[in-house]
Length: 431
Image 1 (tube, helix red, strand yellow):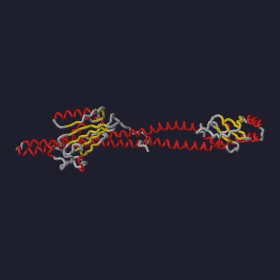
Image 2 (tube, one colour; image 1 turned 45 degrees about the horizontal axis):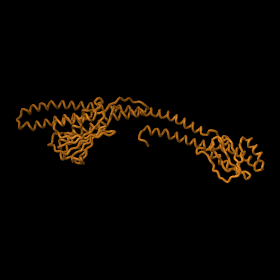
Image 3 (cartoon, one colour; image 1 turned 90 degrees about the vertical axis):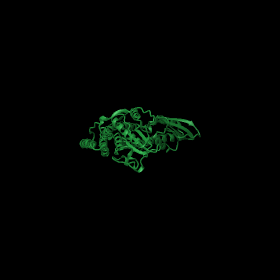
Image 4 (tube, one colour; image 1 turned 90 degrees about the horizontal axis):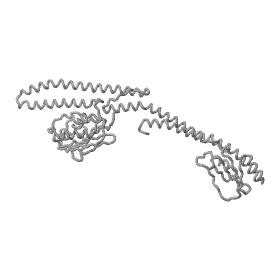
């Protein structure tokens, strides 16, 4: 079966129509046209029999007159030993019945039906060969194909109307799927439930679900912002109090305060990374993002190698989030390795940012753990390399999902460290 609902519904629509037309065609040809042709051919066969018996009585002149009175043309062609095969057109279904019925007469040697208007019958009479010619309309119904042609034409016409109606009925489902897909990528597109009762019910359920998720995200962000604000006040008082201590006593406490501030900042960043505001999406070129990253890391003196990729075209992205995700991934690579390599691969559906480093990497059994919030992989990543609370890669993963993609961690075969594949959907316009 096709993958799309539209074509599945089209098959359900077309199959009974075509099957019904085939059945009717077979029944009409078999029962009606065949029966009519048999009856008409037998009538002509009795007339041929009358002419043949007249010729065999050596009354040839009488036979010629009789054939003329029966609107037939009788010609004497002498004696021939040449065997002529019956001839008819391949689509002449009624011709099969005509040949079969005429061959019941012992004098018939050949029946020629290649002429659409006339039938030519070869007869063996009194040791001589004769040709009998008469109109085709006398042995078969005129224009027997008209019923089938009309059935096919009108069947196709009404099927086309049904296709248009079917497309209109499926459009609300397509709109619902597009709205759901866009919401999964972080876009809130305008959508109003419409269509049949069942489709409208599904659309209303989706709208209620989307509203609940947006309210939940908004409430969570407000709560986290409030907690952050409330915690910064006592942290500030602690910082002032610690500043009055002796240098040897205050240094470890200041490091603890700095780490607490970092945890608060990254936790808020992790929460806001999942915010699904449509207005944040912009049409950007991949090359502009790569150039910006290359410029910033060159100024900082970091060893970042960027594969020369000529990427053209603009895509729908949230620039601040994409930049934050790539900074987290590249920063993670430079923190635990001596170099980072960035390359971009664009296919029909996705944009792939691939970052590799020469660090210690992450064991295969802990790759999934590295994408969980606040996960610190001390055996694989030395904390002395820099401060972190285990939110860099989870934030990047959430940003990828908000863009209809994913973040995959692998072992780098080229450098021996970690290979991070940051993939987002290659969308060129709003849904």
